[in-house]
Image 1 (cartoon, one colour):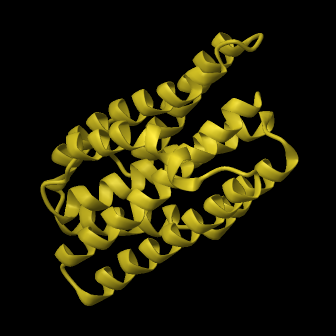
Image 2 (cartoon, rainbow, N blue to C red):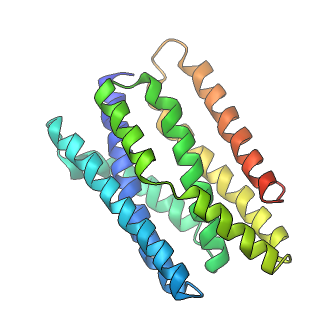
Image 3 (cartoon, rainbow, N blue to C red):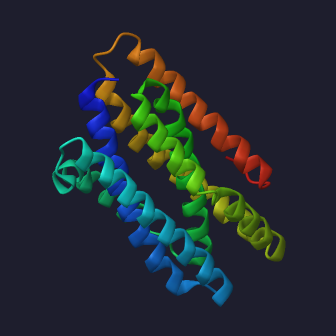
Length: 206
């Protein structure tokens, strides 16, 4: 896409990774076991490593990293404030939903990026294979307490609505490009479809 879109995408990625690090580090305190705390701690470390990779790319393009992130700080902070988990179970569901939708989103838009930026997106996806582990943990939680199903299904629906709104705001930067409206509509449909499939695999209604 356009250079401006690439810089904005890197800016939102950088702040998204930094805020994910902060969120996961905080959520780890409420883990029911040391094993679970270690899992979230490991994820938080990965997110910070991803932030550093994106920051390095921005610097290499002659951009100030903080300046690139600042335009996206209010909306991302507001998103996390609106989707503050009530407990450990909701924290795990949020981590899973955001991780998988973000991965789908960045994979979709990477086809329009320059090779170096597309490679960075792929590197970040390859370095963070967290979704399978989160899905397994969610299944275990639901098996241990089936009463969680209705609450987590409702929470998942709220999360995906908020996440799709965020993705829409990011993708709107490409509106001036030919076919951007059609691509954006197709992207939103694909994100929704993939999320519904993942919820079905957990036995939850999307």
